[in-house]
Length: 314
Image (cartoon, rainbow, N blue to C red; front, side, top):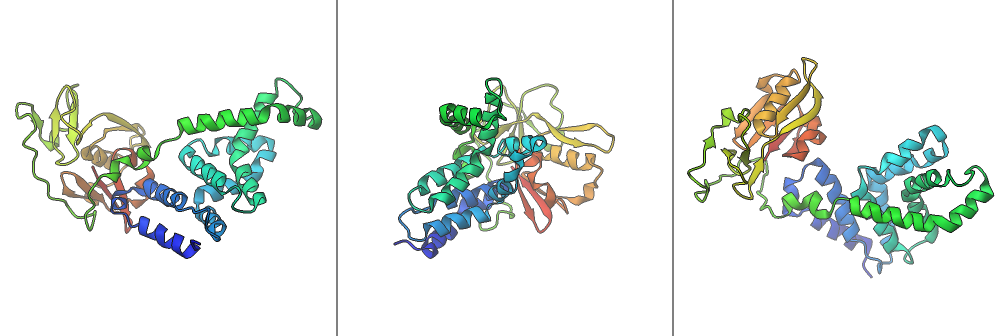
């Protein structure tokens, strides 16, 4: 029998995967659930303890439990309805784990877990039923539920699976990277001589103004290039980003998705340029900005909180 000790040892080994050095905070949170799910062993006599330990350690699941009673309160329905809206990938992991454990642990516990996960679907079902029956009539609601709920639930689960990000969507940009011993240290990169030398390379200081041309930034060297099509797999299209933050002038901050744009954003918030350490053309560190790891930045850069400072790189 596989013991919980062996499962935890495997989990710890997995979470030492080199590619996790490049994970931002969101990817790190997802990695725990990813490895927990893949180390479930239904043949283990201690799998139930391992399963419950994973649920107890997950902030997402515990927050769902805390919201669990809210669907009984009419004016708080939207809280439960929307809770999993931006956590569909997590929802699918929990749901599939519960399905795996059916037959391997106490069924009342499994029903409780599935009940937590089904709450948003159950509320949508009430909305679905309201045009047809008096949902406050217990007998009518029970009859309607017996006829239609299972099909309704399966349709919503299918829709959630389709909408949920894949593992590749969550981790794909870091799975194939060769991790360095310290991701904060610079990595020496030789210039790619294979690039078309006839295409214009824009110096870094000019990269925030492209005169309407299509521009790309090299995630390897930090260089900017004007080109009608992508120069290669390591080049990212430069575009304006609505940061969602209001600048010191009261206007919404729009910046390009390059490091200079990050600097403009930071200064636009009313902070000092002296907070920024320009480590290289592909990496900066902003002093005291570690709390911004889950801001708009993680959609375009690798971000990491290092002792309260924010490390940002392509």
